[in-house]
Structures are given as structure tokens and as C-alpha cells.
Length: 208
Ligand code: GRF
Image (tube, rainbow, N blue to C red; front, side, top):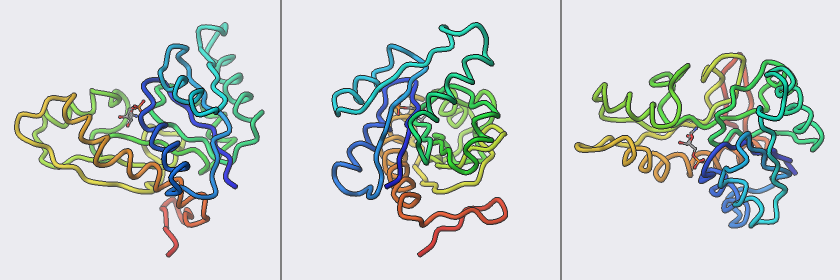
């Protein structure tokens, strides 16, 4: 059984998709041990509690400096003995100590087709604003392993979504969630939980 910590910062719709996937059996061999938010008011924490999942807040505000916060976050995750760390709308920049402690064991969902509209500064609605400003006709979402860079780790799954005339960043964000994020995040977890994902020379191979 793959034990997971899910890290969140906001609404937690991707967390909900994971919970639903486990309950409905589209994700097998996986269990959420803990949901951790940097933001005490994140609705994602309520979603976890509603489903009887342990919910914790580890906020930078409660630590003297970033180093102390990073260490506390790592120790909290380690205390649950998890095999996989899932970043589901987590706005915390993952520190190097965590990447080193969990090599190819941290996954993130990015709301665009990496390597487009990713990297520093591309988070939340800014991604969709960038997509609309460039006028691309196709966008989507990407699940990838987290390495020391920003959105640079091995890509696990991607799914394309059409941009439509008249889209606002908010409308496009919702479509990308519905048509891509809530599908490929649970799928990636199921593949990992069932031993189907391997990283070879920095690239993901999905075993049949
Ligand atoms: C999603 O668009 C995700 O791709 C991005 O942040 C948003 C989180 O949404 N990283 P939610 O908290 O899962 O509803």
C-alpha cells in the first residue's frame, strides 16, 4: 500500500479528486496518511477532515526563518513514513532538503503543458493569463516528478485542453481542472501505486 502525504495551499479540488479516486476504486493500493497545508485557512484541510483524514497546518509564519520552516515541514512529512509526497495545489517552493530526501517520490500537478507556461512566476491564474496572452489554441495539465528546478522534473502524464474564444483566465482554469487535472493526477497516483512508473535516464517510462 502506497502511503501518501498530500500538500495543499488552497481549495483542494485536486485533493478531492484523489479522495474520490480512492473511494471509487480508480486509485488502488494507495492511502492518504496526512494532508498538510502552509495556510491554516485552506479549504483543502476541511475536505480532509470531512473524510476522516489527518489534516495539519505547517505555516512559515510560525517559524523564525525559512530554514526552520523547511526543516519542520520535512520532519512532519517524515513522521508519517510516507512513500510519496503529492503536491496538489501547493504554493510552497519545495526545499532542496526535501527533494534530496524524496528523489522521484514527490509529484506535482502543473496547469499547463510543460515546457510551456511553467517555471518561476507561472503559478495559479498567472499560467492561464500567460496562455491567453500568447494566444495558443491548446493548453492542458502536466503531472511530473519534482527535482531541484522549477517544473523541470520527469514528466509522468499530460493531457491537452482546448482554449476557446472568449475564455477568461478563470474559465480556462476551470476547464483545465475538469478536463485534465482531476483526471491525470489520480491516474498518475494509481500508476505509481501499482509499480507502473519508472524513471530511466531522467525520463518516465510507463510499464504496460
Ligand atoms: C491547480 O490549478 C493546480 O494545477 C495548481 O493550483 C491549483 C490548485 O487547485 N498547482 P486546488 O487547490 O487543487 O483546487
